[in-house]
Image (cartoon, rainbow, N blue to C red; front, side, top):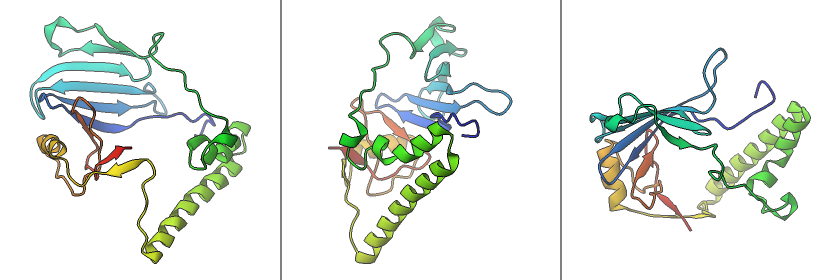
Length: 201
C-alpha cells in the first residue's frame, strides 16, 4: 500500500488434513522491505500431523513450485506446478459495475479502488472507512433489535462428523456450531482455530 500498488498477499500458515491421513502445512511469505519474494510459500507433506516428511515444495503460488529436499522418490528439482503456464488460469469476467449487486466486491469497493488508481489516497481511505463503519452500524442495529444476521450465500451446518474427525487429527478443539467448508476430496483446510462450518448454497 505504501507504494500505491497494492496486491493480494498471503501470510502465516495453513493446514490441510486429508481423509487419507496425509497432512500439508503451507507457510506463506511475501516480499519484505529488504529481501524476499512476493507470493512465496514453503509446503511440507507429512504422514499425519508431526509425522515424517514425505515431500517438501517451495516456490510461488502465482508461478512455479518445485520439489525440494527432503522429498521421496527422487523428485527433488522437479516441477510440481506452474501456475503461470498457459491454460492454468481462467480469465475473470464480471458484469459491469452498474449491474452488480450492492454487496459484490467491485461495486462495494469501487470508490476505494478509484481513489487508489487515481492516487487520491485520502479519498480511498475515507471510502474504506465509510464501508467498514456502515457494516459495524448494521451489526449494532441487529444486536439492538435482537435480529439474527442472515447469511446470503451460505447455509450453516450445525454438525459434521467428518469435519470433527479431520479437525481432531490436527489437534484443534472443534467448536460448535462448525464453520469451515470441506472440499469434495474430504480434505480440510484450517486456520489456527476453526470457525463454525458454512457451506455454499
